[in-house]
Image 1 (cartoon, helix red, strand yellow):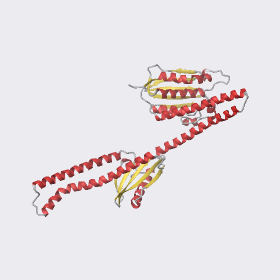
Image 2 (image 1 turned 90 degrees about the vertical axis):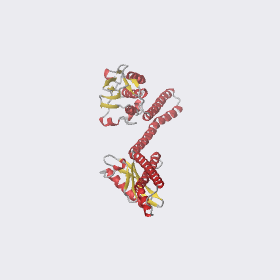
Image 3 (image 1 turned 180 degrees about the horizontal axis):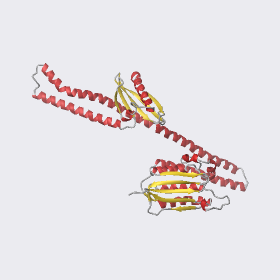
Image 4 (image 1 turned 120 degrees about the horizontal axis):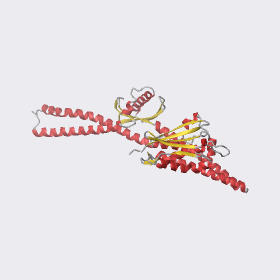
Length: 418
């Protein structure tokens, strides 16, 4: 566990140390305030008991200076305490500090939501309380994970450490960290690596078999066919690597805010898919806005998104087997302004997508028909790239489809505003 989340553990340790400091400062503050109020009275009473009618002018001056210095020390401690409590109060992690009797002396906002909680969070409250009591008695740190299932599954990491002064245990501190997002990201990363390995293995295996067969044959016709297959598999592998790199960069880099002409985006995307459309005899019917229609974002990312939608439509458009085409076989792109956004709709008259698959088509490596995807050379990453580009630009992408009729993908991007 320590190796999987080093940054989380480092932050945890730092926050726990801060919580301990706050506890000590709280106790010190109480003592200082009490002493500050009683100091002058106690000194005067002691002098009177010793037979002094009252302190001399010089002694009064020294006493006033000492008390003033003490007051300044108290004020400094108050400021430091306020700063530390403010720092801890704003953290997303829950922090609870108790004294040696188990009484809460400090809890930040994130920890208070587990106090008097209901349903799933009530489980966390009970676990924290039990662990605090156990740590005070045993004087050893504890760490446990708690799964909460209401209303959605969440994972909490509970860490409790004893607070000691010399040989005495003066309390304990509980640290509550929500690891739900970290665990989800870790699972997504594992799945992505596994999928990439699987996807790379397929063309690499095909290349190895084709190369071996090519080396063992002297038939010129067979060698020509094998060489053609080798070229296709190599191109498929190159496409997969390119898409993986594109997706990785799009996920990691936020899109810069700059004006980009929609007509130029569409023109560059058309240039990228023109050859594939020509090879499949699929006409492209495009309506683009004027050059003054601008969106806010990154030209390269937006071009990649539109090109992926066009390429997907071309690959899945139904064309007659004899090579003839009809107006219905065309891939259509329509771009217009809708309020404060530009809407780019790409439609085809292809095989359509079954309704049960519509909610998953934007997932990485998800394919409605794996056999057809292999035939068309799809990588399974195109629509995932589109979704991430839309998210990076504060936009959205939606899909409507009917089996045997066709599919419409609609990408919306905010208009550029000076």
